[in-house]
Length: 509
Ligand SMILES: Cc1cc2nc3c(=O)[nH]c(=O)nc-3n(C[C@H](O)[C@H](O)[C@H](O)COP(=O)(O)OP(=O)(O)OC[C@H]3O[C@@H](n4cnc5c(N)ncnc54)[C@H](O)[C@@H]3O)c2cc1C
Image 1 (cartoon, rainbow, N blue to C red):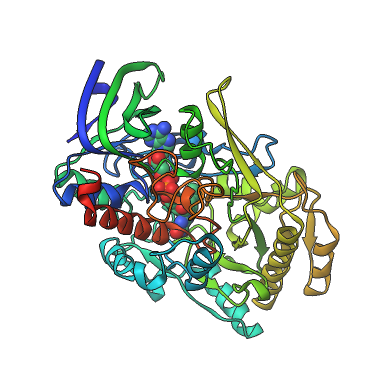
Image 2: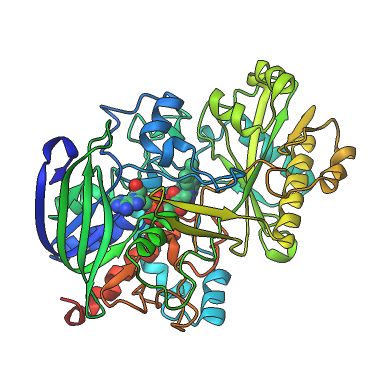
């Protein structure tokens, strides 16, 4: 059953085995596994229940307002880094680029070595990874799914001898619309909205959309449930209050809202790590001007990737295809005034890509009771600044090798490279706050997992050290950045967590 604000009023009381907060990559699979095992499950989702047939118009502004946190304007408190997340049934998986990467073995190993996280090795996770990949149909892009800019990326990489490949994506008969980030109007994107969430509901779970959890309830060191407000989608007025009694509370509100909710509930502060260690995979993008039309908006943004620099000692970043509609392009190119106007006149000849840069968790999240929101801070440390510069230089080198006439680097002080000989000027500019246009669509790490309760928020099973029965099943629990686009890792770890809990059922139910 799916319940929305328009159907709800007054005081509502529910009692279930499991309440899942958030319906994205962390929440969806966990809810399904629990419901499939016969547990009574409630999924609470702050965003609306929007569907392709009724709502997805492919209009950038309209869809950003409906599907993104703060309409796509969420940013660090100083405004220097955009932190993008979905706010709708299906969470960020509804508006993501669908790129599918398995968690790197070396990252999972480092979690065991540095944080004592056992039971989450690549081999431990592999059955869940395979199940997730099959469920969301993660498959390699077919030739017709690689658009011109993505082909040019591969051409440039090949010319330089760099390792590259078509990307895997969770799609079924991709419609090649190119509007992946506005929600797939054809339901070809196998997001949580069309896979795990309906699978959970068909297995008996109830979903409350438009419903934001305000507080987690506890008694005697155990969680007892949550209280949530149901808000009218347009006016934001509270139309109902939902009181839920549950044996397990599983938090999957994303790496900004999960720590904020714990802070608002005054829980899990013992280690001092809650809200710290925010990693975002800071992603600078570059825009290349080609002599010929490249029609960047046609076809999926994520067609190909370059992993030549993925290992930390080689750079610590991935280069991935990305394309934008006119609104996104005007924002992402990071230029303004006459230069921006002139470039937008050449929109048909512009190709873009971005990087997923490893970062050590340079940010933090703090719930602000005055605004009712989470204040986000994020400042690149010296090492990440160097990685960011190297990633911009590599993107520029690749574009010129593919035949670009100019490459625009994403600095606030405009930097237009006219040839590969000018690339070294990238290293002369500052990448300090507000000096560069970077965004972070992959928040992680703010409720860090680890064996030691003095240095971590949750244990290897995802259960908080401080409150029994309270689990973190989203990217917040990653002890470090996962180093690849996180959705497969998030869904697999969430699946694995559900199975671990179910295998020890008498402890919780
Ligand atoms: C623009 C964009 C592009 C991306 N592209 C890719 C990609 O190509 N490949 C990839 O692997 N990853 C990609 N990602 C990242 C990936 O989608 C996320 O890492 C993943 O979805 C995170 O899962 P999560 O469960 O932590 O959070 P989310 O999927 O964001 O889900 C969190 C949900 O919790 C809800 N919520 C928040 N607070 C509350 C509350 N108090 N009460 C109830 N509900 C609440 C939110 O509304 C949201 O729906 C992208 C992300 C974005 C934003």
